[in-house]
Image (cartoon, rainbow, N blue to C red; front, side, top):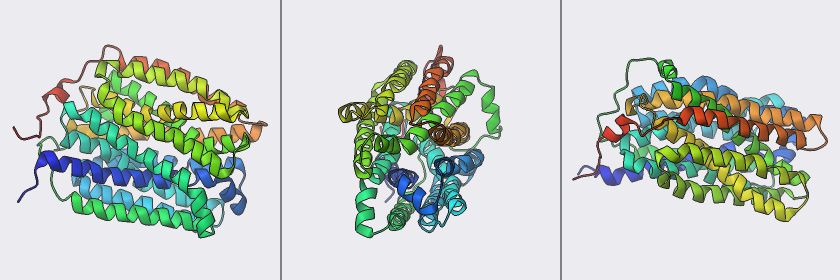
Length: 405
């Protein structure tokens, strides 16, 4: 008996969620262990910052190709390829012996990660109609952050229990393998729509659209902020007086608030208000980073939820703006997602690296936070350019509902 497409789409989304959670788990695995790994491997802060940016560096060259592969071979095997790269990165980090081997292990993540992050919006475009896409994007957007929360909260206690940060990374790799096996079983069912045939026009042709170009600028900025804050905020808290475990828990609590926001807000915000919400998030982020320089723990606890919410929401909001652009049809969502994440990882590479350089050049993180705040405020221009005069896309309204009538 064939599965009910309306019901099975939630199974697909749930299995995708586990893949994306594994993505976040492995991507965030170094942050709560950063100082311990740095000392054990004899690395400077600039070098460890470069290692944090290794996978975004590889990612930006792979993402467009990953989108094309997904458009042609389909989601099932494309996402299996992705999780293999993610698990391999976790195992590689666990056996790293120095700066080069750690950089290469982190870089391997950049070969697998694009298939997950580009495949997620493609799955939503193929399986969900416009009325359900905000909810679907909000749900899958919680996955990476949920994995990161687990990494932040559990890495310290697990390291104490297992005796080494290396065994923590091995365990995270095993989790990714299990998620991949589950996905391969669930994803045997094809999407019910006929909108998945790839178009022949090149992906770069999408850049002819004014709104798409501005969304790419937005992507660079929000990934710059997200990767830099995600990689270095535990260390910011630690230098302000928190223990390794305490810093991880504070940040995890903040990201947890962002997860709740991602479930609720994207489905509630109409397309014409997405730009306004993006702007508010950016202004908030530019302001609430500054209390991290002080030693007032109450202030840290107060701003962590705001920082976490802004970090988690910025990428899905930008992705929803891209999905509502008329030229980005469901058939081209793989290519458009590839462009989005390629552009984004330019910021993903430079963010952690520049923060590491700024930290080495200064007595504290004041220069780094100045850079982050300026980037957040500068992005207001890109948001306005991407959303000016925007209406819900015609093709999105025309995509047939896959639910039975």
